[in-house]
Image 1: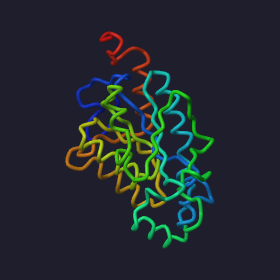
Image 2 (image 1 turned 120 degrees about the vertical axis):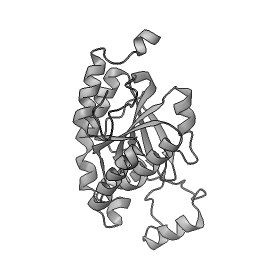
Image 3 (image 1 turned 180 degrees about the vertical axis):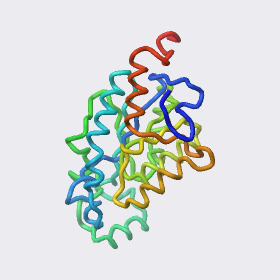
Length: 231
């Protein structure tokens, strides 16, 4: 198990690599670069960049024990056919009309090169804050027998939390890794993490990368994972 609060993860003590995925939300140029969407909206991307070493450490250990790594990317079609009038209005209001910011055709859509991405990783492209909305994310999880999700990425209060909430509603067992998530708004980041733990863990459990790496280390040594025995 992984030490967490308000309960250790997972609740039933059965941490099995083949049923678990590390979800890495939107670590893209548009959010982490100094010229992307996030910066153009007046936010400092430095806190987002700061989590990259931690996320990479988690990715490395997850791969070592056989946990699937799933990345998400957010952006619209180049022809804007999937952008609603309201979303288009917000884009114009932010001064982004005529740019390639948050478009899949632009360089900002790509995952940052500092992020450890391998060919066996799964990439989910989305237009909404949640990775579940209008994507095949849930179908992939169900097809691969994944029932447990560990969350990292940006931003804690928007895309991470929206995906987390929907995952909980779909009965996935969720763990948020506090120092592997980031936001440009510290108050919103802290509040989003706090909300995970209210009502005795209404959105799952909360921990940090040290506890996750320790738990995965125990898993690598053969306990408490039982996947090898169950075929």
